[in-house]
Length: 70
Image (cartoon, helix red, strand yellow):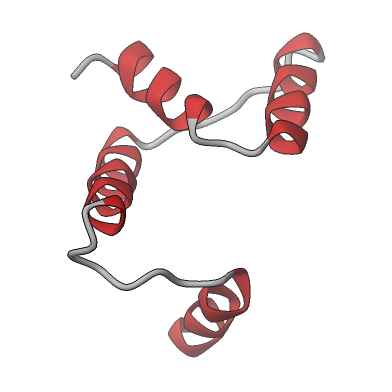
C-alpha cells in the first residue's frame, strides 16, 4: 500500500470534524508526519472491528490505554 493510499484510507474513516482539521493543517502547510506502519495497523484493526473480530472501544477506553502506557 502506498503512503498516499494509506493516508486516504485513514482520512476516509475520520469524523467530519477531524477531516476539516486535517484539511486545515494541510492548508496551513504544517508538517504532518504519518508513520505508515501505524496507519496500516490502525486500518487492520478497524477492519477487524467492523467484522466483529475485535471489540469496539470508546474514546475513554483509548485514553485509559494511553495513560497506562506512560
